[in-house]
Image (tube, rainbow, N blue to C red; front, side, top):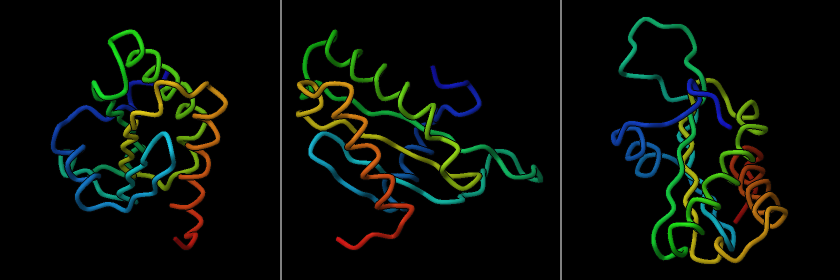
Length: 123
């Protein structure tokens, strides 16, 4: 499970990451990254932790499928949250194909998207 200090919860933070950040898409998901964004809610604080949030719409599947995808993505991000610069906002949006993807496929797509965002890979 993703620790509480690494969870993205506010609507404004989701909007900031999606609207002002960079994105990388893969067949089963899209990752939005607002790199090193300072936290406007905690002025004067030193380097805030990286926070991640997940968007899994009804297009992915029924409630059981959506919750399964969210659990898998949270588990995968727990291991990868340290890769991002401090203060980053990360939103992982599952696409309809994520409901049919297994854990290994989601991991490959997430790794490829993160590599593209952090490695500066060309489109």
